[in-house]
Image (cartoon, rainbow, N blue to C red):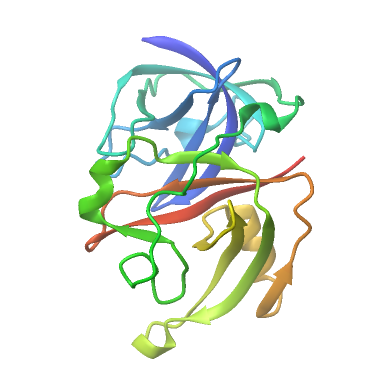
Length: 226
């Protein structure tokens, strides 16, 4: 078992729990704490501080992991020791540029429906391409940023309001669904439409999930503003 300190760069929704991710303090190495559940999400209790609060973006968290648990392209997964209570030991106040990743592409991109869902743009890859990648998390600075709130799925009799973030990175357009609960809640309380955001001092934590119905889907796990 090993104690680690991470800078929290995502605390997004996942099934009945959360997907927490961050970088080891003082290193540029990603960690995604996971549980022993089949779907590996972290419960509210498992991530709760002694104060009763949940981790927030840019918290510096001390936790304990048992072992490395990589799955396909998700090489960052580490099994938590769920008997050790997470501790907030500070807040990250340095320049977030120090933690940036610099991938050329956000996984695979293409001009056909293998790479873009009905409402997305370059927001998925065929599951047989997963083995081409060994990283599932990036912290990036977008070149442009727009949030869409709209009703999706009416054509398939599954209407639901959803929030997506459209952005450019390395001059390539992407539009991912959002799993950052604070951003979701904020924009779902607003009218349907599109909202342009200034990219100054804004960062995105983007991730790619496990295979689902033939694809691995990408999403924005956190929108961070310094």
